Amino acid sequence: MTEFLIETQGLRKSFGKVEVLRGVDLAIPRGEVTGLLGTNGAGKSTLIRCLLGLLRPTGGTASLLGCTSWELADAEKSRLGYVAQEVQLFASFRVRDMVGYTAAFYSRWDANLVRELLERWELPESKSCGVLSAGERQKLGIVLALGHRPELLILDEPAASLDPQARRLFLESVLQLAADGERTILFSTHITSDIERAASHLAILQGGVVRLHSDLDGLKDRVKRLRITGGGGRLKAEDVPGVLKWSEQGEVVQVTTDRYSPDLPQRLHEQRGVEVLVEDLNLEDVFLAFH
Amino acid sequence: MGDFTTLFSVNPSSGVPIYRQLIEQVLGLIASGRLRAGDELPSVRQLGAVLSVNFMTISKAWARLEADGVVLHERGRGMVVQAVGGAGPTPQQLRQVRELMDQAVVRGVQCGLSRADLKAVFRVSVEECGL
Image (cartoon, rainbow over all chains, first blue to last red; front, side, top):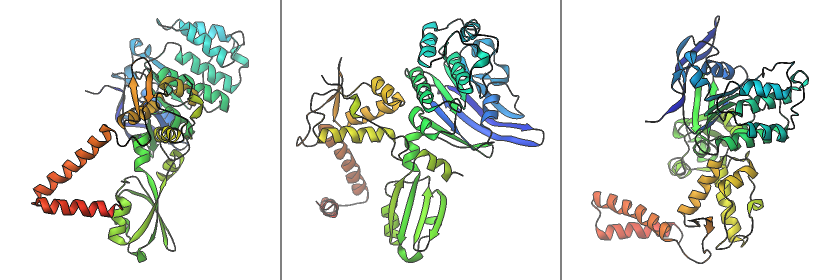
């Protein structure tokens, strides 16, 4: 049986009258690196906070490492790493003290890894946390979350305040951690190219539900934009499976589908006498096609 | 033995899956003679770290190339480029074609096609291929 390190069923969360999560079903097995995409306000942070037991679901279930999120015990927490959107640090602590404080919570702490990361990321151990920039705070947050080499790592827009160089370092660190194929990682982001590089899977949160959860390569094989010409207007929307977007400009029909198969152009040609040009889509195009 | 890591680059914003970009690059490098029989592909970890790409993605590309007989995993060396160019199809590729053809023949027999019918169908598909 597949072991799901992250699992939600019909997860709902309302704030007052506003329902942000409307039945999220998501199951992420061990070893998957999943990028979580969604427009602003789609509920990414709410989902992550429910998963971590920081918010109590209004309905449905959320579990991490096989344990109900709201009841996570220390044993599960020690196998978990989390980087919040706003990293919480003690302003009066130096970087070194913050590291020591965090390390004390974990029985297994890789001090060498942390020292190496601090150096690579140019975070001086003697600097006071109170004067760190937004980017430096985020870097430190990530280092602190990686220190115990967690089995499950959850990051809420980790790259938001990082410059391109730091983002690349961040990706490298995540990839190193994921290298053994045993770690499970979920990160939300707006930077689709980071997902293309680092992730094996993509999940799109839309309107409070998971609209899509797929491996990246399969997704790119399935979602295509077709430019269809000829046929004298005989082509109907029903002819194309899985239409996401449909637009007509004079003779040209432009269709985005999420159920493309290599035999589709030939089939349409035979059935409707049309010529089909197939365009590959990158993740940004795919994301837009679903909205 | 040369280090071929620098020969590779990926464009994550392209619509082409990264593993397929890598496969194309290996095939291109072999066709152009930059990679020759006996050369070693960079290790999954090495290339993954340099390109900042999920290691599984590289692994998948190398595995596909191995399945197609382009490279062979040699103990202690990694993925080694096989003799290519004019070498004809590999036994593996031949086997794949055989399997596909077997399926077609079985289906034809189920439909009641005779030996002559099958041959006729085969001739037509070969001709339509432009061979």
